[in-house]
Length: 255
Length: 67
View 1 (cartoon, chains in turn orange, green):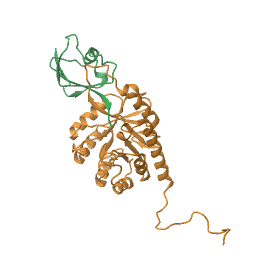
View 2 (cartoon, rainbow over the protein chains, first blue to last red; view 1 turned 60 degrees about the vertical axis):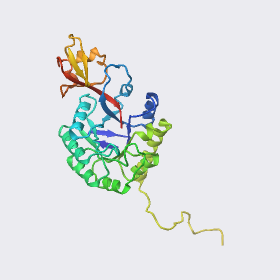
View 3 (cartoon, rainbow over the protein chains, first blue to last red; view 1 turned 180 degrees about the horizontal axis):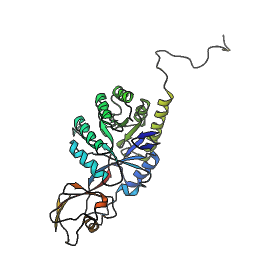
View 4 (tube, chains in turn red, green; view 1 turned 120 degrees about the vertical axis):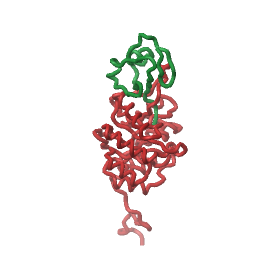
């Protein structure tokens, strides 16, 4: 069970809703992923095209918990405003704090992320900051009272997988709130590795939406995250330098 | 009446008196939208009673796909 604030989830896959080829594929991908938390962005509406379809309207909102992000914000103030807009929908009280400090790498601005998280916690949000894999920053965010920490595996949408598994494992070890690996996941094995390291969940988008077959990839990610989690709970064997036979050496019928 | 909606200047009939009526005017009343009036974010319950007046600055936002 994944517990974030007052919420409890069975699934450990958090799925983004951006950049799918079309709504039908997206809907099926969301269904087979069995994700219970879906991320969204907040943007200006085209008021002159009221009938343009919107993915949110196609969802049974009883089945999903919305995790809006503050993507687009470059400062803490902008992030706080976007979060408040999202909450005013009356549909959610969780927020993914995302304050981007560099447009080329899309890496988060640590100082603005910290400030925005602090302010939103005061406002009563369930706060999940997207952060770099900096161990001390993760600790500071936890000390503020954030409900989960979401370190990136590698830059958003890059599909590079986990570039610093050591830092990630330090963050996981020290953290008493859930750690959700967010951004940079490319393959099911990346997601499984995150879970084997002890992550509480994985948030991904492009790895599924950008796959040749997003529905199949959604299923693959679901299975990988379950497998990785089971592997973590089961506890891996220690690595040895030389072989250890699996079959007994006694009772051989030769020699 | 002249309003600035999402950064654009638009002309609205004077019969539109509240935020709820403005949303109806644009056929957005059944949609999930969030309204900010002169930099004050409104709860949905406030749409009925909140009046719009000439030269108000209004933001109408919604949820779109994102990661």
